[in-house]
Image (cartoon, rainbow, N blue to C red; front, side):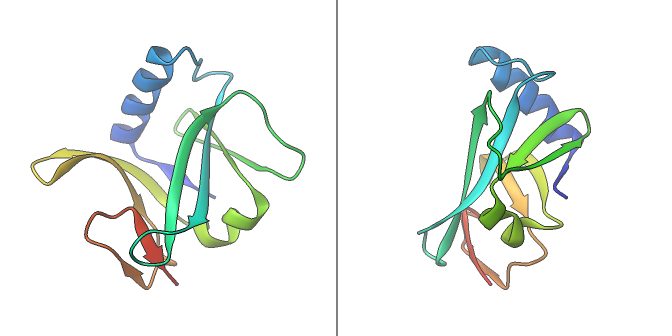
Length: 109
């Protein structure tokens, strides 16, 4: 399961509305792809459709879909949002990551 912090939820709902998505019916698609300075990087986008192989979760009122392959890397992850001095954006707190890069956008196992 993937959890969503209160701060991330607020930002997700705001961004979805700005992009023409509805947080009550549409999804955030979270995935992992090859790349980044640590080997794997996170992928986050809005989506209206669920594929047959997708895992579906809902946490804190946010609907999340994850492809089957990415799910193995993301079990137990919490999606948070940081608006601090070190940068603004979504942050993945992934207990499976052994190493992350300074920007927090890539990791390795």
